[in-house]
Length: 276
Figure 1: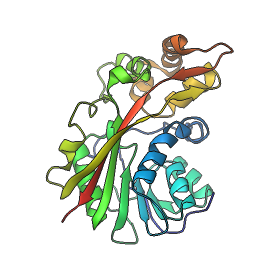
Figure 2: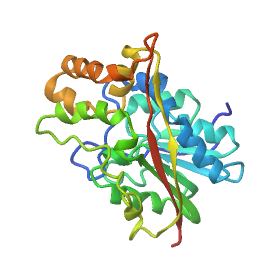
Figure 3: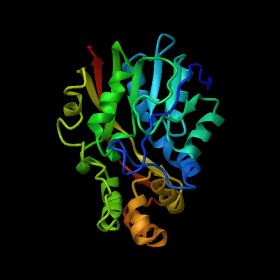
Figure 4: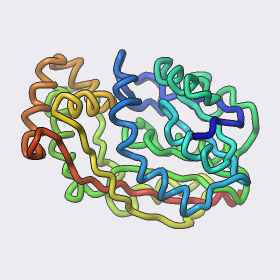
């Protein structure tokens, strides 16, 4: 796969004090994300790139790009790519892939130290489901997009279309009174589209993509899911061992003969054009 060509840095999803704060892999789980979980969203990345005909004329900025697989796929199509990722472990894994990814200033998470002023495509593939103020995040993405360029927002599809919903409920049950965020908060009709209002963005299409979560065994499934960061509040409140045990129990209905795990899921994306 081709390496990244354009420069870029990371958009911050800081701690709870920042209004754009969102989830991410907990300490030590970045490699599980890169080696197990990240590939689950490849159908989403490819569907968006196909629809927008991403190629040599495209400059891509990935906000919250994590370990950079989506950027690698865009680079392989000839695009110039850059990324923003606040978490140091994930950022280093992206750099190990020869991607230019850096960290943003906490006080200005939408801009940070991005070396160019705007991109023809800004993607928000994974940041929104856990963002404290998704509207601000989208406004920041719009500000980094060329007029006439596109912003892509993505989130989980309807929970009734996602077999992982029952497994994700472990995070809610075990988070106690902490501020664990609902990963399906933007899944209702119009949830993503409403974020475009006031951001200088005009809807330009949407779609749903099947993204099955498939793992070699229960251990890989638990490690992959914990790496999403959606369980961090539960782990902090209830302890890692208890959360892992309940995850295993919740995953049993999705065990296949031979011990593999598979859950059918749908993700939704919205494409918006920057008009001002």
